[in-house]
Length: 344
Image (cartoon, rainbow, N blue to C red; front, side, top):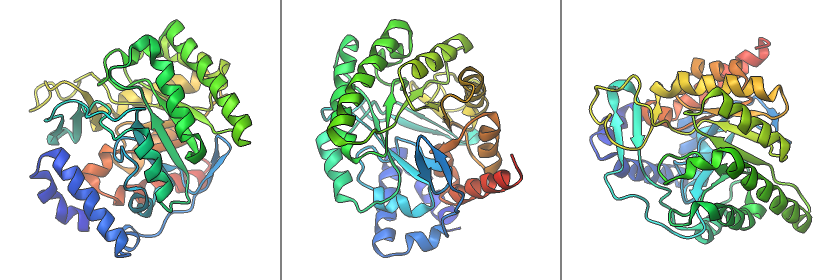
């Protein structure tokens, strides 16, 4: 209710400015102790995935809190888990503004942020300073100026840096806003990356005495053969989950709308069917060997239920929260709890 009153003001501002303003207001509400009251009680619908117990299957997707500086406030919105980042080894400004655009008639966003973040050292300091006790995923990427053939170095650096404070770690190889990044989803490049990550994780497991799960985040623009290859490679190298999906470069459904010609990744309602199809293909290819975390176009509880029916174990929200507000979190969690109770 409160968000519906605030949204016209936020939507009158540049999207990136509105984003910062909304997070600042949420931090204040959390500090005053009213954020949890406004969001309502956390829906209890536990799920066991990747060896972790999630209070409910609805999470926050990466991208909303790139520097892990709003964890405590976001944790009060009823999510079963949070994923923060994408973080890179070194700080980088990302692409020049303007770099985020609303396509309001389609309930969509286009962004070309470009992994703007303060670097992994500041990121880890922010995580350690938070008092969050819930499940925290950390999404890692490569710096824009690291040659693609040396991408593994960046991912290993981030893996080492965040390992001790992550519930799970997501390897982002699917953003369309870092040049050539998506090529890491293909053939020998993917095999080399996952093999190197598996070896690094083995060493870190011995050092810290526990094994942190690794998820791979993939693009919605893969074809069925590509999806099968990613699934086979992830299983072969001992990964723990696949997140489907990131944003799309397609403009299907928004072609003639304002801002549709902007470069970047499209998210929101127009992505729903495409992302769900990837989940279905993954489910067929994995045959239960690895869990799927679904993201893309979830704008209501029924959309979350659709993703679970397609084969996902968990779901993540981002653009839907921009358009619907925090009430979407509880709506999705309740829909999935009812579905589970009904045997769905």
